[in-house]
Image (cartoon, rainbow, N blue to C red; front, top):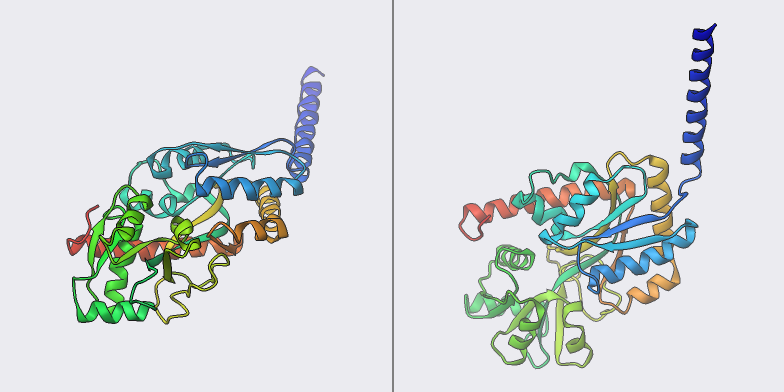
Amino acid sequence: MYKNNKTLLTLTAAVALSSLSGVALADYPERDIRVIVPWGAGGGTDGIVRKLTTIAEESLDVSMYAENIEGGVSATGIGQLMSARPDGYTIGALTYDSLITVPWQAMLPSYDIDKLKLIARVTSEPDAIVVDADSDYQTVHDLIEAAKENPGEIRVAIQNLGGRIHLAILQLQELTGTEFRIVSYPGGAAPQKEAILSDEVDVALTSLGDFSNLLEDGTVRGLVEFSDTQNPTYPDVPTTADEGIDLQIGSFIVFAAPADTPEEAINALESAYKTAYDSDEFQEWVANVGVTPNWLGTDEVTTWADETAESLFSEMDALVEAGVMSK
């Protein structure tokens, strides 16, 4: 009798736990959701993630709070995301460095993109070519022709050697049969601006958003964005697709969760962010910040990320073998 009662109690408890589990999934979310931003507060990624998340939480009836975890060119924050409980209550925002730089350089042994489930890509921030307003180069093709006629003479300001922007100019040279004089400004966009304004360089390669104040007051012009989607903030700047150049490169924001997060949670999060993305509030806001809204949902984003990483890894490996870059 004692054994039978114990068995009955055990079965009853198991059924109760199973029922509770089913209700928990059906009612997701039931508590606040943590959103890891692997960059500092106040930056471009932080602003976009917070804006979109604030709108998205309206569809979920719980609070979603952003937490900035800096370090390791995003590896510290994304490493925490990879080790978080896969219950739908911790997600994070990945950028170019999260998907490309950190894995390619093998910065952390435990860092593995397969530990994540990608939810959606929401924006792209293409690299772009910027010139002084008085420059003779009216189009990117003017610049390419001049570079062919004067190899190694046109000075191009980039940021870190070996970084994404360096890779962009190297790819442009390879595609167009040109040779530029590459000048590195590791301090970021600020010294690039100074270099353009003081005529130290002829061209700067960065995002249009980095030069937004100079674009707005007419001090510089954008020649082209390395994208296939028009930037709503700068509709007069053509894309490389418009100009017949097969080169798209830049940063982006992708939301992700730990790999074993239940599909019910992933679907709910994707739906909430898609609603936020499509909202007039977000579309009107993002049109003024220099990035391009560029949605890819759960069914497409992983294939895009894998193909992008594979292509860039191959190109960077080839540049290392050629002695152009170091790993």
